[in-house]
Length: 134
Picture 1 (cartoon, rainbow, N blue to C red):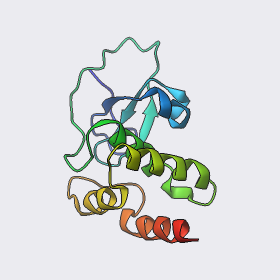
Picture 2: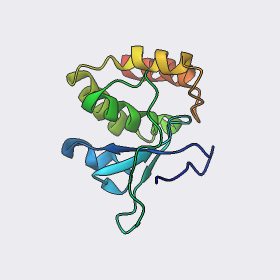
Picture 3: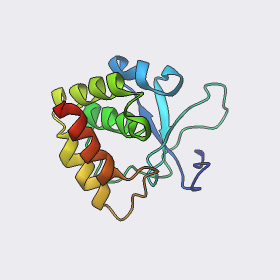
Picture 4: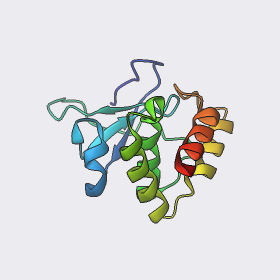
């Protein structure tokens, strides 16, 4: 049985993190928890005796593969774009190199009724685009 999001109570989803992205993951984990509603990510305590059974799935609007993982990690840095600029740029570049259109994915997440991200995705998308134009 998995864990629940401390913010919204939804069952968390375990997400494997590619080796290249572990430096951006909570506690640099090889696997993280992700809330399918608020999109927050959390470290998985490797000493936790609970199995990481999939009680829930990520929203269909989250791209598959490594690009989707990079997007989830990027979303968790959007609350402070200025402080996380280098990491955001690296994650964006990684996601795009993996075939994910980050701006389209953010638009889809913002329009997804099953997602209630802790940041305003539409607004942060515009700020991200503006930051990259500088």
